Image: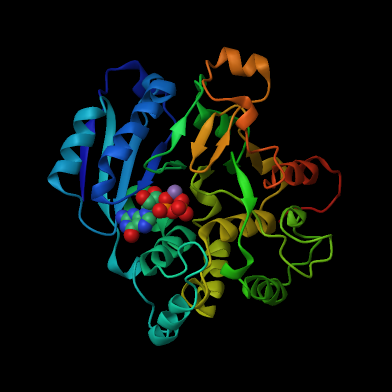
Length: 336
Ligand code: GDP
Ligand code: MN
């Protein structure tokens, strides 16, 4: 665990920054994909603000990794952190035999047979916000090796989040594979019952419930490889109780629950409409999907280089139009 301090206290950017970091979970061998992504990020955004970077790994970062990233990134603090074993291993209540059987039977869904993927999803669902490096900050922006930014982002998105009291933001959204989470929704219903949360309490429940019926999960989720969020939305007793309740059901291992559906369901239970933001002006690519701004003035002003016709956000496989309907509807449920 090391921090390399490249922040110049006398430099103007340092006085205006929000308390925020980029957060990147990756492996040592991702270093070149990551350098390319950091280049996009720097050129399109961070050259103006020099926000800190926090790199996390379930294994120690190599000297080469640290050397390459810290040579490339000119300013800001760079944190290179390890994830504690207890946040990346089987809890005692998990039957590892049963977990293995599930992996053997899940070869036909994405990452169905992967053990590390399950640890990764569980880490993002319940532990990233407890990491001491992350806890220093109020906001994070999740970045992955290999993603691309196709437009300039000419304003401080963290400042935008704070000034507009936003807690969670997204770019792309889509439908989850139902086979990855056959029992999740029933447990969510159990949780709501146990906490006396009614559908009316949850102002954003229509984001994720089917046909206002609450019978089933509509599989919609914010694609969590991109998130800009207030850590306080996760780092609190209520969210931790929610995570622990689900974690004890074992679905991160007996099924293949993703962190994205868990985050999205938490948003729908705990946040209100005004807490949520869609960055429709950010040009973003994570294989295989692209968000490319549709508004031509935005496209030109921000010097976008993506093909607007290849935009995924308004396609049938995206949940974004549904999300926009829910956010703009005037149901009167209150958040709590
Ligand atoms: P996908 O986006 O669902 O295809 O999943 P990814 O393979 O991109 O993984 C999501 C994030 O977790 C990325 O930032 C990866 O770099 C990271 N990641 C996934 N698995 C591991 C792992 O076993 N170790 C580490 N250190 N990072 C991982
Ligand atoms: Mn990814």
